[in-house]
Length: 265
Length: 362
Ligand SMILES: Nc1ncnc2c1ncn2[C@@H]1O[C@H](COP(=O)(O)OP(=O)(O)OP(=O)(O)O)[C@@H](O)[C@H]1O
Ligand SMILES: [Mg+2]
Image 1 (spheres, rainbow over the protein chains, first blue to last red):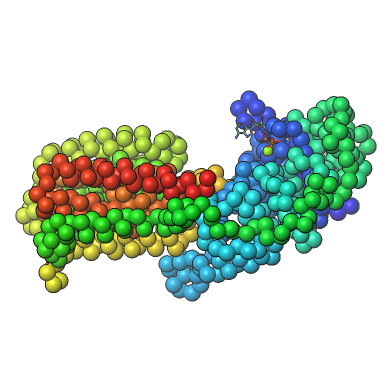
Image 2: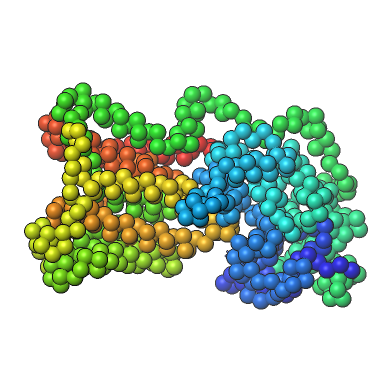
């Protein structure tokens, strides 16, 4: 059995009196699309924030490719190869598409001038941005220096997903990437996810859209009351069962696959 | 209690999506806006917000040269306007940085004055060498900036309240250090003439420029570069525009804010130097209105009080607009109260316009 790309055990996070993550476990296997489903407030977003450095868990351990890691900020997680599209996006509306794609990882001009003046290499960044958007099928972007706020909700979502997909080297985490999208735009994001998987990268997809989950996920991680209830291969379960389990109407099946000899539950 | 709609177990696109299969594929088309010319103007201004202040400046120049003719357009008068706005413009640079982060700084004016009275006192009473005096003046500015920055960025207090408090405290320090006494230009010239250097003027054609107004233009150019063309500048905009997005993008929001307040403090110290040259003395009362005037220049210059958008060039133009309207109205013989009225009106109009420009996404 191969090692999980991203793994967590016993994660805990409290916000005041609310326990958002309650001893949660997590496993993402190489090359898979893992859907994370659960009720509103189940703690899905908080859990992936803890995995990506946006939130510091009060207890528990995270491993990336088998090595223990502790991310103090989203930047550290990104440098380690984990890209995340957070729920509600993480774009700066007043900045341009290109500025947003490179926010926090701007490229400087080379040579002595670049080092002394810290002048940004706008041309290279714009060209790279255009290339990435085209590679991900977000073509027909005319003006890469257009402010993000002048785009439609769907286009913004596309930019956010494109940013994560373009820069990721190990893991892509998407928190409800199709929530605000129409039918056609959702389909595009799903295609984007499949394209990223085809590049060999594993993806974590948080979604409330069961048809989407059942269409593209390899396994489904059911989250309930701040912790992982169970993980099921998509082919071995049904939508009604998943819905029943995540709402607590049905107990999870007793038989689990046990990665690395550790109990899943 | 199974939801019948969910009872469909299938892989591949769902039925309802098949209908969309024949749709045109140019989904992400960045379509030309179709709201008519008004909408197009709005989009244009959203992209180039400095256009409006520039037009207002031109309009003011045309208007007053029509009313007052030769006198207004004379190079000497125009260079006088530049001199008159040097202090507002420089303090406005500091204010722009702060407002870009969605903050506001009520203390910039008194910080500037404190640097002048401390430097003046150090020069006249203690006779320290010039390098020390400049270092002391700069440290006072940096220190005040750091204090504001720590309270805003680390203790996360609202900038308005923080700087309201430091405004009063620093104002008291000004009185304490200066003893409400003015230090005359003659005393300064005897001890540290370099403090007066920025007031040195020279003639080009009919215009009379001062070192101070040239330094303002240099400062504006440097800040423009830093804000528009370096990563730090991008981060300042992002922190003011969407702090959460900035944080999630890996920007250290706290350090960026802290740096902005400290740099603003340094600019205020610089403004203090220009101020000594402009007044030709160290006075605890001159520049007392710089706090509010700087905000006026920033707002008229098209920088949004909500953060994230604006530029120091806009502020420079905003300061010039204030100068042109004051000077033009004075030349045309209007009562001084109309100068204040006009400036106030411009502020309101600028904010109304900003509100409209920011609505571009709706
Ligand atoms: N910053 C915060 N401060 C306080 N409480 C928080 C914070 N973030 C999350 N919570 C709480 O933690 C719990 C889990 O929230 P979380 O956003 O992780 O849920 P979720 O599963 O992503 O829900 P949804 O499907 O609605 O996105 C909720 O009860 C929420 O109120
Ligand atoms: Mg969530």
